[in-house]
Image 1 (cartoon, one colour):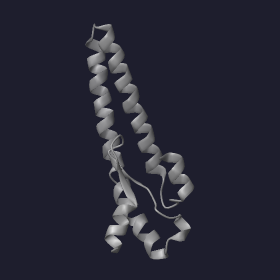
Image 2 (cartoon, rainbow, N blue to C red):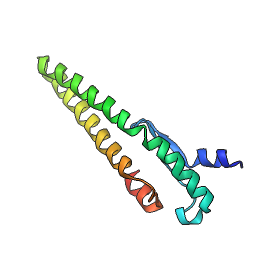
Image 3 (spheres, rainbow, N blue to C red):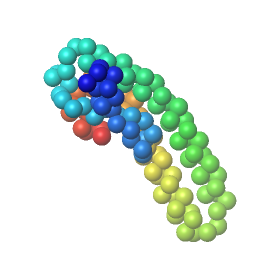
Length: 113
């Protein structure tokens, strides 16, 4: 397996968050120094895109709040509230992932995944 293929396998797409998240096939300290360096470099690339993902969710929440303010149908209001809560939850999770830096230890990954 080439290094690039191996590295691709260490991250999985998370549909809910809209980013790749680490999913190691072996413990962090079981990786070579080169493998860890590759993972950290890849993570920093992914991590750099998180603020834009957060901004997009915040804009989505503002649109839903505007719609909620004008909505008269109770059922639709309830639905909008659920969607707003879910978007806020995603933002929270993205913020946790953003704070996950070079200490990508296996236990941290499992706790936030």
